[in-house]
Structure formats: structure tokens, C-alpha cells
Amino acid sequence: MKTNPLVPLFASLAIMAIASIGNAQAQQRSEARMAQMLNRFPEADTNGDGKLSPKEFQAASQMAQAAAARAIPKFDPGWEEDEFPPHAVSLKSPEEIMAIYKSGKPGRTYAEAADAMSFPKPADGILRIVGTGHSFTAPGYRTLPSITRAAGFEQPLSLHNGGGRTGSVSYKWEQENGIFQFDGKPLPKLLAAISNAEWEAMIWGPYTADRPKFYTSWIDFCEKYNSGMKYFLMDAWPTLGQVQMQYQRKGNPKSESFFTDEVFDELNDAMNKRVAELVNAVRETTDKVYILPTNAAMTEAAKRFNRGELPGVQGLYKVIGGKEFSIWNDQRGHLGPGFDRLEGYVFYATIYGKSPQLISEPIKFSNNPSFLSDELDKIFREIAWKAVVGHPLSGVTDNNGNGIGDHLE
Image (cartoon, rainbow, N blue to C red; front, side):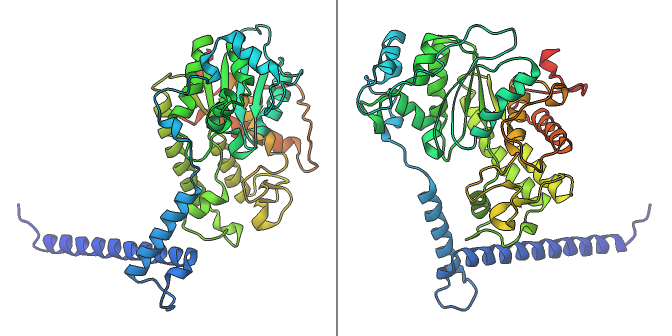
């Protein structure tokens, strides 16, 4: 068979064309990166010509690394040790822990009489839950009891929350144990509850630069007294700080038009990668660690807003678009009005493996924003279930699409 003499020529031309396109795309990416770095660190442009030389770009990169380092919280060096200090409350007996909690020693908050330290054994499938958290987990904690009540049961909860870092797992471990920054000033609310009563699950909220040991310390203590518990980590959603860091921006985007589906996919993927690394490391202690996928739920809601499919919702970020009924309320990323329901639905769907779409009874939420219609609430339930069954670390799948987790059937 004869070979067409033009084939090698065409192949060579094709390879050259592909290489040319690749080089052009790489150059465009490089120029975009340069522009981003110049926008974020204009002081790196020492000669003031409006562009970065290779040397100036290197200086801007060093500035970015320094800024990132400053944003990472510093943890007590005691976390590097193999053992906690001998006076750590978690090393004491259950009776001693409860006595410390009830003692009201100077330097700490006295135990409130209303603290729920134990609950009777509930019906099969209902979990007694302890939890730490902050303002990102608060919406789910607030709405979950209303959701479970409509589903036919009361949710047993014992929480020790804070705001920001004061609600993180490491901070609460130090505070409850009376170690490191709380040396000699323990407040063992959850340690007293866990060691003196029965529990089936624990929930956490994430924080910057979390380490596996922050979580495994809690797991080891829980397993000592309540073997076989389940553990749920909320993964949170894309904040404007994450946007600035990921896209090397000095400030917020000037318009919400910046937030395309592709941007939300990139933010979602970056978050999923970080959380997966953490969870897989923690799972070396127990495989019963799961994700409450609020990231997937909120980014899905954002995409639907962009398509005009969230009736009544006015914007994405209130600090950018200025709309009252936005998904995110402020610079730090707190949820806007009504979106506490969506977070609560994600909690319910993950923990109990059932779609909130199956709840037929009216749900009596304490907050009812005027814009939030039954139609939007129905969409929230759909989004939550989609996020949960689609996340590989939620522990829930629904292959037959009936709204009940496969592990329950």
C-alpha cells in the first residue's frame, strides 16, 4: 500500500500548530498571573512601569508567601509532643472530670445548670450528638432540631461552641483540658458529658491549618468511653479570603459577575482536596469520619442563582452586590438570611441518610425571612440531598433515587 507523501507534512504542521496554541495559552496564563500579582502587590513594581519583571515577580511571590504565613494561626508547641501535660483533664477519671466541671473554679465560666450532660437512650437510628463549632456551624446547629422535630423526633445535642478560632477543635481541646493557653483553667463541658454518659456522634467545624491530631485527640477520648461513635466534619464554603488567595487578588472582585460556574467549581475542588487530605489522615484512627458537604451545597446554590433558579434570592455576596437577601452576608463569609435552612438540611441528610424532601410535616423554623417561599425551601432540600449523595466522603449514596441512603436499606 502506498503512503501519501503529504501525511508526514500534515502531521508536522498539526504538531507545530498544537504547540503554537499551547505556547500561546501558556503565555496568556503567564500574563494573567503577572497581572494578578501586580494587582495584589503593586509595591513590587519598583520601577513603576506598570508591569513586573522576572525579578519583581519573584519579589511579589515572596510577599504572597509571607502574607499566607501571617494568615496561618500559630499553635502551642505542646501539640508537637507525644503526650499532653499530666494535668490535662482528659487523663482523669470520669468522676474527677465531672467534679472539675461543676466546681466553678476562679478563672473560668461556671457550669450552667441548663447544660445537657446526658440524654436517655433514643429510638433506633437517632444519634445523641456532642459538638464543637463556631459561626459557620451555628446555622446548622440552630435549624437541625426544627428539622428533626418535623421528621418525628427530638435531636439530642450537647454543644461547646465559640466564635471563629474559639470554636475550633484545637481551641476547645485546650480549653476543656486546661492546657497550653488555658493552663490550670479547665472548662471540661464535653469531656464531662462524653466520659459520664452515652453518645453516638460528634460534629466539628473546621478552621485554618487544622491538623489531624486536633481531631484524633477528640476521637481517642470518645472511643475510650463510647466506642463506635460516628464523627462529622463540616467542610464550609468558599469565603472571599479564599477567593483572594486562590486568585492572587488584593481585594474583592468589583462585581459578582466574576463568580462564574467555573470559578465556583475551582473553589469547590480546592476545598475538597484540602478537606479530603485531612479526613483521610484522621481516618487512620477510625473510618467513621464523614463530611457534612456544605461546600457543595452552597456552591450549587450559587450556580442556581446565576441561572436565575433561586426565587427571591437577590445576590451572591452582600458586600459586593449590596443585596440584602444574598447567599453570603459579609466579608468573613457568614450565611445570609434563610440559608441556615440549607445548612440544616445538609446536616440532617448526612447524619441520618435521608432526604429532607421526604419530610411531609411543616417545619417550624424560628427565623422566617419574608423572601423565603415554599418553592425556595423545596429547592434547598433538593440541593442538600444532591450535595450529600454526590460527595464521596459523606457516607451516603442513593443509587435507586428513593431519597433513602443505600446503607439504610
